[in-house]
Image 1 (cartoon, rainbow, N blue to C red):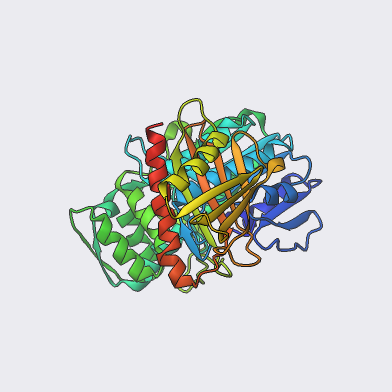
Image 2 (tube, rainbow, N blue to C red):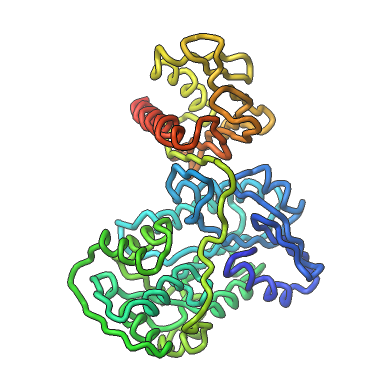
Length: 444
């Protein structure tokens, strides 16, 4: 609820449903002056946290999450895998509320078999919600123009800071930007409308145009004189570097977005939710949007506290197997892979990793039997020399995407080793181990 769309949609929903009570989830759980809005803190990486934050019954849910910012002091994993966990957690918790309608705001999808990781991730989130079989409406949008939109800020910074721009081939592909008003009105209009259930809609704020023309017209609107020179190369690597340098935008955001620009991002006429603004020019769109030469910047306001680690790896799931089987194979395989250095002792739900079979316990983890099931195994870090005192670390294996994969994830782990030693020893060893385990599963 603290994001660009989330903050703006709440007043619209209250106007449409004046008797409604809105649960507004965010990391901080910011309070609201309106008694109908209850702000609750929530960690979407924690299923337990979401279950505690959601009310017992939900009519309408909005999912406005995209994990491209930092989530821990050390992130070891793809944003696509993070997004899978977040969506899966939200859907699992939401299913228990008897939700009547879920609305998800994703991205426009080009008609190609070679999607970027960013766009494949958007589709995977759609598929995750579809698997839980509650009524869902998907809105797909390209760049949402506005001063607090992350992609929009990149555009505005380029125009503000570069008097001369060398424009590679991706700036000459077509896109359909959309304004905030179109997004908000579409979501509000579709909310709890049965004819919109299980539909996918594209959003358009104007006619398609190239990114180059967007920058030219944006410069004119801001009163900036800019020179643009086209070059016939796509150059994604060089583009990522100079966009990151000029805009001072984290690579977590820039890299996936640039890689998505090879193909046109155009709203399909056959799937438009509304044609009201789809035929106007970009100049009309930008005139109606809040874009000024000196707007404030709000990219990635969240900064992780402490020396926490999050590591997520996508593993193949052999046919007919589940997360419980993966966990058991992992516990049996790991000491053999690290032999003779590591030994494992299993005592009911308790699993103890020791060095050379001595009394020195490296790591102690315990299966949470009440929070685990065949398709999700949750283990808490309860001790050991490698875990800092007070660490809230947990390890999980979960089945996702209609049983195509298992995600192996470590959350909120705090190492006891000095940070730089951990980062270049234990952290790298963990990645090596998971790659080897993935290869084993492929041949199982």
